[in-house]
Structure formats: structure tokens, C-alpha cells
Image (tube, rainbow, N blue to C red; front, top):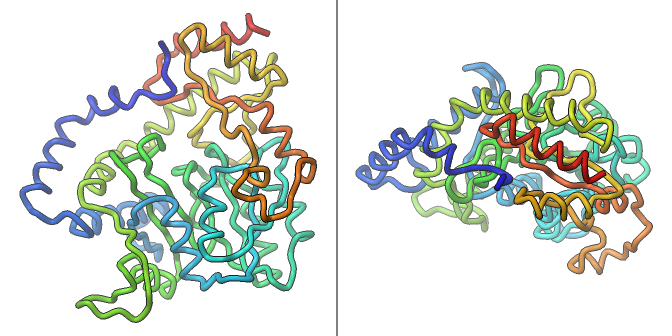
Length: 368
């Protein structure tokens, strides 16, 4: 059996540290927004910028979804506003826009990167457009230089969905540090995952930072004083403690993922479409996602051999039942629709042995 990831093996490596930290937190009886959250926020900013004095604020929140809707709320995105994004992503990206009463405006994806096609964004900008929400899908950064040029030209906000790209880079700059905000998920399966739900928002803006700090805590600035209606979206101490332990190892774990991904590519490049990685980009390989017209046959063959694989995502967002009211139909975003019929994510966790990767590749090669 080869799983998509092995969280048990990862835990056993850090078991003593985790148990010690959790015991310390339980004895302290500080469980929400305490010193471990504050320290994690400080260390996460340092991780993203490589600097102690960096001007980047981090805020621990309850989930990656919370990070997205708090970002939109902090920018006063409201009913009637339009937010440009990709249809090929996890549902939370679009869900957060709908929470605000705003309209998601979909731009088709680039066929090579599977990220939003930056050359098609300006065609979708209207007088109602307020923001662009790019997604760094599977860990490959979107073309943020072009996104920021467009946003600055049209006076638009940018919210980066970094749920799958913690540690990924463009020319040495980590994702999450380009836009007005960067939104991270620490769901257990992520490259930096906690033991439950968790997330973070990062921003260089003092104004946005103060607004989200209030919004995440019921709109309160403290002492039960509420200047506006907020949300309950706070990172708890135990999750922050776990994240601090894992953050210290993240660069090394991402390096191991990249080694595994590169081995896959060397073995599979002649039989399937392997993930793209443009010059100057560092893919974090949250997922190693191949493409093939024979996707379903590959998936079935792997399953028969006890090997896990997952289709992320079987349907683009614009064709989901929940988005019927947006008025889009099959054929409107053909690149996303084609990708959804071909993508298959393979096991690629850091601790995965090279012989397991070779076994997966051998089975795919034989299948095709």
C-alpha cells in the first residue's frame, strides 16, 4: 500500500516535541490566541521574508477559508462587487467571495501551469471589479509580476490564495508577499499542516492588519468593545505550538518533496504530461499532478496495486451545482474543463521512499 501521504511517519519524527509542547499548553490553560500564536505569527513572517525586521504582519486564523474571507472583508468587498479568480481550484476560493455577496468572475487557466491565465485577466475587468484572487495551484506560483502589473494599472486589490504553496517562490520571493494579503491553510495534509484546522493571513499593510486582527475576534478591539460585526476565526494555541515545531523543518521537507517530484518527472516525462516549473519559480509540490487522456485507466490500475491517487479537481467550479446561478455552462472555460478530465495527483510526501516512486512510475509506464 502506498498512501497519498504518511502523517503517522511525520508525527513519529516529532512526537516528543509535540507531546512536550501540548502538555505545556494544557498546563498553562491558555488555549486561544496566546503566546504560541504570537510566536508563530512572528516566526511565520520571518520564514516568508527571511528577515527579523520585515514589515510583514502575520495573523493566525481558524482556517485557510477564514483567511480568504477575512481578507475580502478587510478590503470591504461587498454585494455587487466583482472578484476575478480561477475556476480550477478548491471550492473555498470561490466560496469566500460568495460569503461577501460579491460575484466571482472566472478567467480560464493556462494550459501549462494550470494557474489563472494572466493574459486573459484584463478582458474580464469591468467597472465593478474590485480585486483579483489568484491561486498558486498545487504549489506552483502564479505569475504574480503580471498580476500585480494589471492590478496596479486598474487600481485593484490582490488576495493571494497560498493554501497549497507555503514555501514556494518566484525569483527568491515567497508566495503570499506580493498582494495586499496572502492566505494560507494549515489543514493537516498541507506542506505546513497542523493537527486540525488552521490558517494565516499575511499583509504588509498596517491598516489591513489592524482590521483583520479585529474581524477575526468578533469585531472586538478588546475589553468586549465591538466597533463592527466580525467573525470567530482564531488560531488556537495547540495548533500554533504544532506549527512552530513543523515550521522549523519546512524548508527541508519541501526540499525532500522537490527531490521526489523531480524523480517522478525523470521517470514519467515521456508517457504523461508532468507539472510545469518555469525558470525562476520554485514549486512546493503540495501535489504532484500529471495529465493524461488515459487518467481513469491509470487511476484504476494504481488502485488495483494498492496505490493511492486523487483527482484534484474532477469538476471546475463554474460547473458545480452550487454555482448554477452564475450563468456559466460547459464549454465556456474549455482549458479548465479539459484539465479536469485529465489531471491525477500521485503520492509525493517528503518521507516517501524512492523505491515507492519508482514502483508508481513503473505501473504507470506499463499501464500506458
